[in-house]
Image: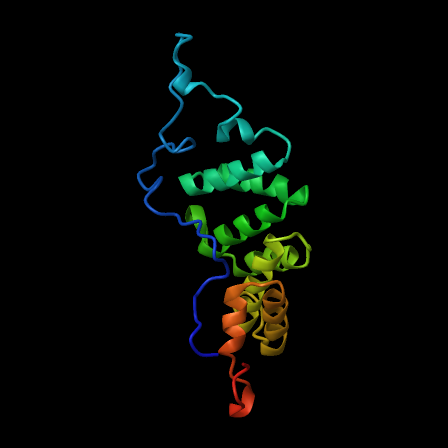
Length: 188
């Protein structure tokens, strides 16, 4: 396949970046909670909109999005705790978010390509609108590149076709540029 070679499974970016590189506490992307006896110090209250609060709450769409926030802030301990409970509750977005973190070795861990691609595969098979389409594309890429799974062009093409059938522009472009084995003409 020519014209398409973006490394990585996911279009979502959960980059490690500079956040947390110097050991600071970034659970709120602004530093640690500063406790105060003053009732007017509401800027530092641990409330229901904080990652610290979300870690201990049951899975919900809002709690799962706090996992994404924690990952973007560099707090992968909290992010993984949130993602794991959201995945157990069936939230497909959390599967994709955690897969991106696993693939990138976020939080200083070694990349886990097999774990990442398994989450993407589960998300692709979920039938959840939007997320499943993205996951189909990402699973197709993993199969095509042999990234976390054995390389399988035939299976990759099936997953690209499934994502393209749901209107994913990247999958449509990948199929348009597909070069079949033995030098056959690309798909139009």
